[in-house]
Image (cartoon, rainbow, N blue to C red; front, side, top):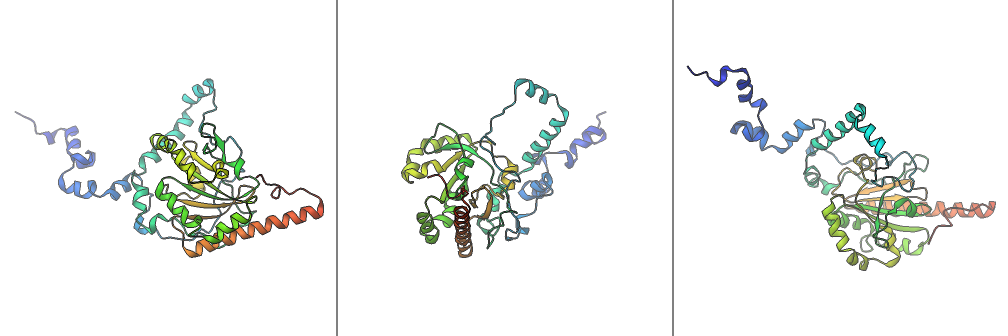
Length: 321
């Protein structure tokens, strides 16, 4: 006498749709879970809001890291010795931390950032109309990458940003780079370009191309010569290709909610983020960026005049060429 599969407890559990993978579900269950990508992502990451429910809001608080950046940080190189690595390997508390990080990575849908570009062209926030106050602002983190001037020698972004007023564009991919150009391109924002030309020792443009895929990074390195031809020679040291060291925590700290979108930051001489914009710029955001840069230039000139009166050296006025 044969036993029905449903009479065995473990077989009943196997036949239950609750314990099946998506490919083994019946057509009704597949239609409910398998063809609904958002439902599958919702099961893995229930705290993730629906894209349709996301509303575009102005950036109302300072963004950045709470500590001043230092050259050499976030290089992606593990400084631990073999003994320290061995001790961490058998440390249960650090295993729990690593497990939590891996869980977040697995729960993140692969095409989440691309699907978010359907809403507001990927824009994650509206740029503020005014710059943040210096005492309230947070810092732009240090990143390490190769530049057009020295492609084989790693360079720090902090060494370039310090003692200058910098307009930093951060992107990953050609589409995101074109979005940052809507803020900075002379055809789109002539007032900002004229200001940079009039203040070459004080104002500068810095580009950070983040590409953590080794194959895409190899392609970019192959076309470095073409990228050099598109830029002036004095700007080669201000173009960074960053391939490692940029963590998800750093991206969240500086407001990079979507890595497929371009971001623009106004960073002062102390590496503080005073203004930020994302995706394609509108007229109000362009005017806000120009007004913020003017205020920082005026503050720099005011400190220089005060330094002359008191006989003290102003770090901003003695910016590098």
